[in-house]
Amino acid sequence: MNRTKGDEEEYWNSSKFKAFTFDDEDDELSQLKESKRAVNSLRDFVDDDDDDDLERVSWSGEAVGSRTRPGSFQSLSDALSDTPAKSYAPELGRPKGEYRDYSNDWSPSDTVRRLRKGKVCSLERFRSLQDKLQLLEEAVSMHDGNVITAVLIFLKRTLSKDILFRELEVRQVALRHLIHFLKEIGDQKLLLDLFRFLDRTEELALSHYREHLNIQDPDKRKEFLKTCVGLPFSAEDSAHIQDHYTLLERQIIIEANDRHLESAGQTEIFRKHPRKASILNMPLVTTLFYSCFYHYTEAEGTFSSPVNLKKTFKIPDKQYVLTALAARAKLRAWNDVDALFTTKNWLGYTKKRAPIGFHRVVEILHKNNAPVQILQEYVNLVEDVDTKLNLATKFKCHDVVIDTYRDLKDRQQLLAYRSKVDKGSAEEEKIDALLSSSVSSYSLPLQQAQETDSSQNSTKCMFPRSGRIAVG
Image 1 (tube, one colour):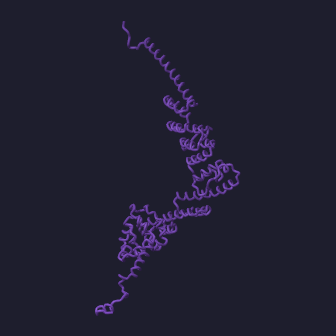
Image 2: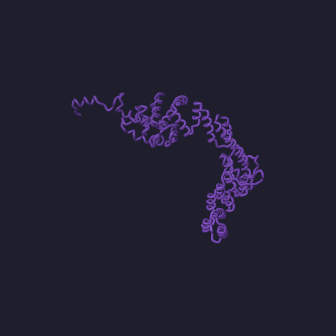
Image 3: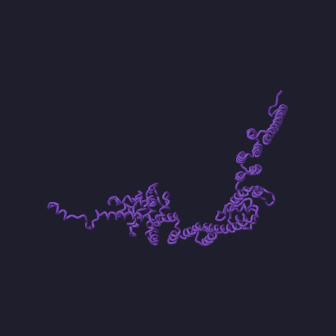
């Protein structure tokens, strides 16, 4: 092989292998490692337990104390919770210079601005407490609730509880966001620790009370509610907690007794109307309806008596009457409905009275397919004439309409209503009878008036006015 002197020098001074240098700009292995670190930093941002937290954030809603711009954080939430790690794989082939978006060169303010625009940034470079707090303050200054929440998730994962609580205590906006976020994701343990640190006893008690929602067993829930009775609630909340405990205690007793009666098959009401659901954990109004439906005639001393429930939980008269009416009308127990509105005075006289108004009574009765005779009785008790006529017309209570127009002496309305009833019906005959009787009653006074006028005229001729004396 013939080489020139210059070629030989170049051959001996060159090599296929590169020596190790601290400048890794052209080192492919170093580029691959750098890319891998970038991907790992992104995975750290979305992995671990906080991934679930981020998915549960209501990004469309606005947390307390924030002014979130609509749609300003859509892409960030997608990047945090929905974008799989494999989507970054194609980036490995890019030059190293294009990975500056994922590098550690961004300041806290730059990072927050990029987060606000929906760009993916790693927060792992902020290791010192000072940097993390500066990052939080920059997020708060942006007034973007989603950015604040994202930073708080990072701080929650990387700071101890004591340090996090201590720093948030003097940053009320961020504190409100954290409380809202913990309520959203249901992290009751951390929320209780936070309220305990802040010495917010009432909020601590309420958060503890909410834990009963996670207890499915009725007996265990009852025992848990018993522990909540003595907690430092407000006066109104304390009464609510006590009522909740008492109601569940009653429901457990009623449920056990009724389940036994239903399985025995010896009680008529349970045979005709089998229970569709358990009474456990139902609201007070539902419990009252259940009691009025299955235990209406029971003595006041029993736990399942409607009157006992009314007195124990101080249920207002309107609510009690409305619920009892709905229950008894559903059973078509019209005598019970009548007794519900019948009152006696001290002289023994009876009177119908409805604290909910008889117009509502009529609507409920019609909803439960009450007979026309029952409807007419209660439509007649409506005091306002226009309301009475509207209800009577709507529910075809013809007798009420006819009698009302008769009392109003409105002949024109009677004639108009005659066309709305069936031909040859009893209602049409009643209208015809009223119209014919009204004609005769009107003709008699007219004849008497004419006779009176003629007698007055003759009297005037016989006795002229004083002061006008004829001179002859």
